[in-house]
Image 1 (cartoon, rainbow, N blue to C red):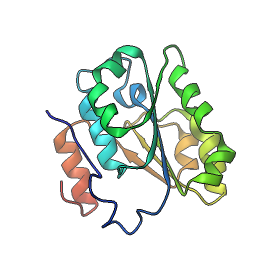
Image 2: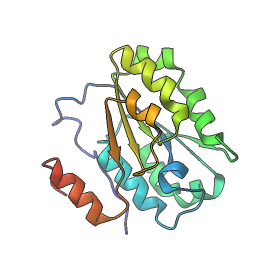
Image 3: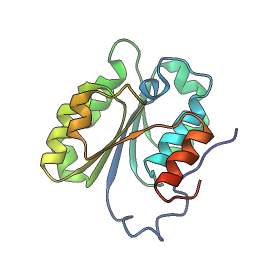
Image 4: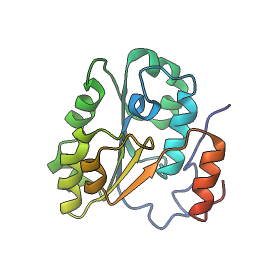
Length: 174
């Protein structure tokens, strides 16, 4: 499968394009582990489902091997990359890049690509300050505290069939 390129050219036609969005992507969490044969596809589904656009601020963290597997997609995204291993390494790197006070000052929307509860405090702070918080996570792998802190939680698709079902339920073309 080739690259999935959401958001290309959507800046001018999208009335919400002036909103500043921040994406915190723990791709290992979205894949369910440090290695996944379809990591490129899962990243693509995340970008489509979260309505990522060129120009959005994106931070992505994972182990070195998974980042190498995603090298071309990441290059096209122009995102800040953190190569971190170990327990909560990716989470800690993403949170260090996104202190909650700075997020509230600079962004209208935060999209968290992870189901880990470690992001709940950031989500709670941002939402209480009026920042829209969306979480995209694997089904049945979303922390209750994070789900409650978000405005919306989206189960990430792992197949085209799942994505088409999700898109049609929201009135979108798949």
